[in-house]
Amino acid sequence: MVQSFNVPGQNGKALFPLYTITFIGTLGFGIILTFLVFLVTEYGGNALIYGLLASTYPAFQLIGAPFLGKWSDIYGRKKILLLSQIGTLVAWIIFLIALFMPVTELIGVDSQVLGVFTITLPLFAIFVARALDGLTGGNVSVANAYLADLTPDEERNKNYGRMSVASNLGYVVGPALAGFLGATIYGEIIPVSAALVISIIGTLIVILFLPDTSVCTIKEYSGSEGIRKILGQEQKECYQVESEKKIKLKDVFKLEYIPFMLMLYFLIFLGFNIYYTAFPVFAVDILNWSPAGLGIYFSVISALMAFVQGPVLGKLARRYMESILIVVGGFTLGIQFLLIIPGNIYLIYLAAFFFAFGNGIMWPSILSVLSKLAGTAYQGSVQGFAMSSSSFASIIGLLAGGLLYTQIRAMSFLIAAFIIFIVVLLSFRLIRIEKQKR
Image: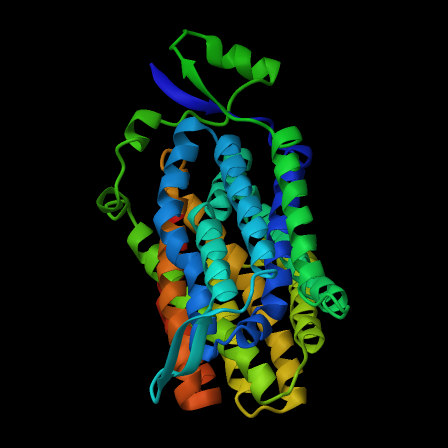
């Protein structure tokens, strides 16, 4: 007797709520990304505190993601996605309350290494909100596992590309919406309120529209396989959930090629998050951008990336192996970090094109390769540990980005480029692995 998940049919209608949830999740993050650096400064922080605040989410995600991924294998994807959405909803409520708190000083620091900053009451509350959101923030790994449940191997690159399109559309709309709403006399209150409403909508979608998964028991009935195929009710596969309950990190590291993929995950997120901390501060400090200007730039990148991950990736995936797309995409991505360093506005917008194309073809391919190498039995757990790897890298990258920028300014992007180029060199091994798997 084998326990398994009974998943709905592999069609676009079943995947559409998943895409919508992904869009809503990044929409909320896109909103906060635009004004968070300004909010930190307003409440007494500096570049280091901005990096520390940004790293709070992945730090707590590192704790929660493996549990959520494993629980999704045992109890079903929908229940865990709902738990994640509720956590995000509560976090946005705390964030909104923080904006009405008095700016009371809790800790003051004046250091040559750390800089000058103050931890105030609303800033502390925002830290709490980001921590709670991170603790229940395994929705990405669960969504990736959910998509793998519903999609055959040959369709995964395309469907992960579509999920990335949905994600990037959130980054298109979110920053633009934050810039527009934040321009009122109410400042950040309206954008945060909008993020709260969006989170409520996401929770309702999970409850009302997302197909459920349920643990089933399959007994060996002779001849039943052919009948189930004829009736069109055959399940994709059975997951041995008993083993999932016991899987640990050391067990994941025994799976073929998975440690290598987790290392790539770590390095990619390390490079990215040095950029994600340094660039907003760089945009304010060197380029003198406003929240609207920063929002427009992130929207441009995301719009371009949505296009790349839609029709462009679809055509390329039919002609080239996923490993080739990872190598080419990674190299293009590394170039864009170098283009930012001079601080020239034309080069910075050229970098946006390189960012969109490089990340647009690399990241869905990474997700697809990981899901194929993980197999069906350990899909949720592997995705959860991959999320933990990315979270650990994000913690280091975000903190390092803030600290590096206070010391070497724009040269921080050179370090980010170096890390991504290491990923490119390592990814040549994926070409050999993919050829062996064919």
